Image (tube, rainbow, N blue to C red; front, side, top):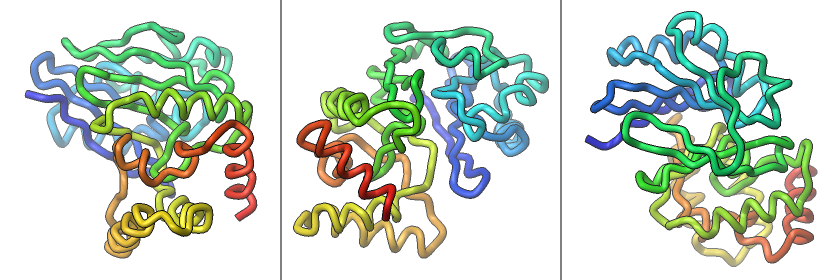
Length: 241
């Protein structure tokens, strides 16, 4: 049986991801902003949380770490470069390290820009990517601690992944990103068509993520940026919009 990934909406626009491997019985939480909704969903499904994977130090990604570990005894993994900001880490990882859930493995990839030590977990064999706040549906993360050049390098890496890769990002920003994309690329029919679906989904209160690399390749203006300068211009314009 393939891995099962469950979306848990929390706070105003965050998503926590709960991934379960039926063979090993392991369950991983990715970026728990809070604890109780995550523990409740796991309990409802009869899953035992064994690990937490953090992508970066922001409170809406690590806020539930301690309470989930207290309740389950799980092991917490996160970026070595931000270990001084995430007090709950049991294991620190850097680019090239591997984490596992049962027989499934994820390669750690450094994707600095939103934060200095931001990482992603790429499960190439399963076409799964947990990207935190680096890539969003039709958007990218704000450059809080890094540079446009770093974010452009991240986009270049993302563009090498298979179209089938499912991208699990941490926020419901699609509608806002799409409205900006329509201004940035007004002649892009793929963006226009996608936004029709996004607007309809949001009107019904439905989520618009996860997304895929193929969909982002066609509609994400940051992934489509020509160079670092262009990406920086786009990011500045989005920040001001």
